[in-house]
Length: 441
Image 1: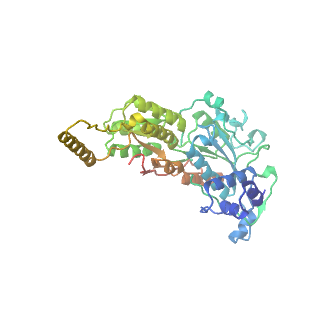
Image 2: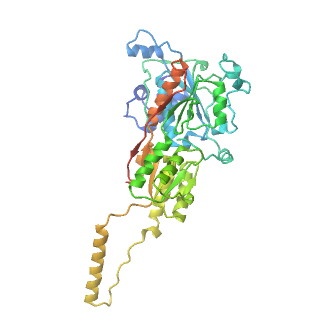
Image 3: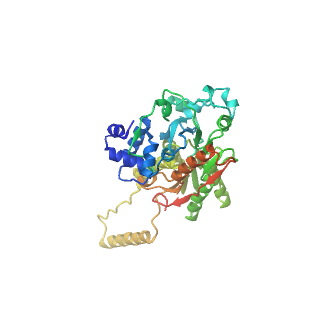
């Protein structure tokens, strides 16, 4: 598998493939082209030639560190397509791993983990730790397929943790190595034990306990910290929600709804605490639990608009907000919401009456013009700051979660643990920040 093969699969030049795979800051290729190139590299099981990379760096020998493979666990979704934040986060993890000479050997989603079992671990293996790898410990490498609609409906799950900052990784383009299947990360028909596990978002306690019995090389990326059960890369969801709420309340909003996960979710806790701290009543009729997808956000917002009068809505993630924004746009575009001012029919009236009527219209227009134009109601704010947040109309006001940096750090922390760089559980916390756009300004 070579750059030439990737170029043939994607319909671009070899030099474009090389630049995308080699240069983190290369931005000339479109996001769609970058996505095709990375998908082809993964499908072809492309592994950079370490000798060539060493030569390009000016070193006399290749990096002697062993090749590592990681498995990614995404238990709250059936597919990376269910949440754009996690899709972008996964891209960051994948590219940072590639830049470090590692590969993502598999992705396990809700479909594989719905019964609480680890599909790559036998029943006896979970009771052994620090044992030499054996057949029972091997990881079945299989590319997860999106779940069918039947699978999704059979596993309702209102708990998610929020991924297109595309960041290509430095992969040497001077030489490529074709390795046998047994030596390469992404394999469909062979077995290979993963060296470490990266959890995107929250995982159930049952799965986490079983995973810890199987391996110590685990790191999670989440908005909901644990009690130092594993290495964690977090951005505090409660603080992010409080940031959004402080902004809404500072604008004078008092009737603020919430759409998103409400089960053991820090963002929901942040919403509630902000309402209570500000002396605002919690109206549970305007708090709508969802599975935090675009479609559920759309349905929840329609329900809010039909049944309640609210000033603003906090959506737990951008995927939810995109659906809510669509529902709000439809409501504002409907004839009933337009409420046009009726024109005056003056036929048959005297000139004096006509003059009085025109004066009344002028006075009314002046009064309206002197007032601040009311915002499009209700205003929307969210958490994540995915690429689509700035592309949608109106653009989405949101709290930025630094997913790209969190993904990079997760790979670094996991490699450090594998190499015995640290033994205690560590937590790296990133800050969030408000991004004001058109949906709430």
